[in-house]
Length: 259
Image 1 (tube, rainbow, N blue to C red):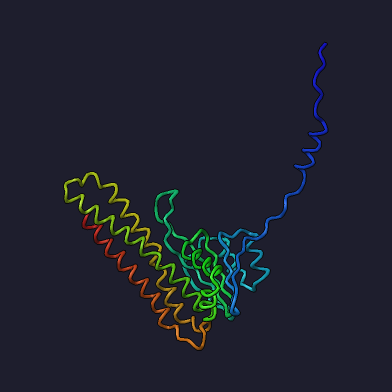
Image 2: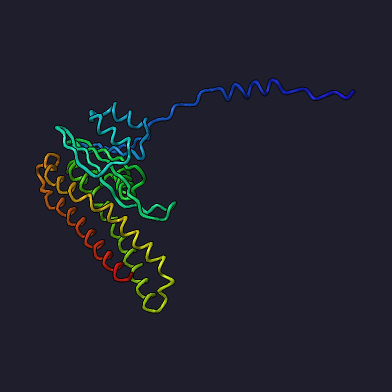
C-alpha cells in the first residue's frame, strides 16, 4: 500500500498561535496643531473611541458629546461659561448618489482651543488645517489672533466653498435654457428636474444657518482678541450667507421659468 502524506501538524499549530495573538488596540483618530497659546483639534467622522478621548481631555457637557455622536443635528449654537458649541451644515456633492447632501460640522471653541468635528470630509476645513500644520508662518498669523479669528476663518472658508458649486449650477441652467430655445426641450426634462432638485437640497442646507450666524455675532466677543476688531469679519460671514441665499432664490426663479 502506498504511504499517505503526513499532515503538517506543527505548521498548523504555529499558524493557529499567530492568529490567536490579540490585535493592537486602535488609537483615537485625533489631529492637533498648536501654537501661540492655541490648540486646534480636528476629529473627522468620530467613533466612540474619539468621543471618549474628548471626554477625557475636555470638560464638555454630556449633551454636546451626545450631539456629536448622533451626527444628525440641526444647526445651532449653545453657549456655556467657558466655551461655545456650534453646529453648522454645508453642502457636499455625494458622488455615490449623485446629489447634494448636508455635511455637518460640529465646533467647540474656547479661549485657548478650537475643536472641529466634521461628520464627513469637508475640503475647506481639511485644506486650512493642513496649511496650518505645514506652514509655520500661517499658523502664527492665524493662531496669534485668538480662537475667535480662527473660528471666523474656518466658517468663512466653508461658505466661500459654496460659490464654485453655485456657479456650476448657474452654468447648467444657462446650458439648459439654450437647449430649450434650440427646440430640444424634450431632451432636457430630466436634466432640468435634476437641477431643480440640486437647488432644493442646497436651500435646505443653507436656510437654517441664518439664525445661528446672527446668534454667533452676539456671543463671539468673549473669544476675540481684545487688541483687534473682528466685528467686520463676522459681518462678512453673514453677508456671504445672504449672497448665497440670493443666488439660490434667483436660480429657483430661473428653474420655474424654464419649466
